[in-house]
Length: 340
Image (tube, rainbow, N blue to C red; front, side):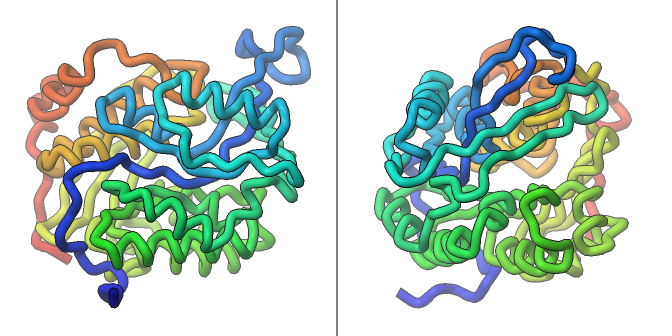
């Protein structure tokens, strides 16, 4: 089958199957009491990974989230698989490698940003190849999601992301790509900017923080991001605690973020992505997609965990996103402009 041009809308969209989230998840070591690594006497062993976070949050909302990756065939790898499955994601597509280790991440909690320390060089996930992408696509997913973290793990992972996004598009499967720029996993900024832009250009939906777009490409506005990725059908630009904007074929929609007392910021972007994608797959309007993203991000921000616990039912969250009841009256109507 011949692939459509990069960024083209997919046709013949499947209505069944899971959202397939592909990327590394590591064993996570974090202070249980929210104190710093240096001072805490109580450490907890969990898991940390952008794509598994998205799969878990999707599952909590009622969309089947499938996480695909590679882990070491070791106690940490088996523990990570068990934890992600217990949190609701399906893990049938996770491979255990007896010749490579599971990556480990240490998180140092801070209210205004939590520094992390990676021990992931040579991990099992960094050995993903295009053959892995072919295998997971053969399971007939409804949608595919991955991120710039996966692109930065190794050359073979970079090739895997290309094969994943191109293969999905060729088979009429929707795709999303979260920029997720992590300086610690890249050799240099120029390489990251080039590789991430290339991968993002292959997706149907791209999610990016305006701050990371500025670091990568010098973007200071949403329109600057659009110029970097002109062929992507939908770009969602998150502007920190201020707002989020979607730039699509039908125009521009901006929805302000809700005020949140931040407990722990890590994981909020993944929760936003899950909320947005869940609403997108339900066929909701652009403003409702952004609102559900904000609501899910707020839940993660109020928790020490990457996902947090839903305070109400998924149906209630969706209804709130549709109605805009949590937003001031002046902010309920999204800003719409002519298509770019």
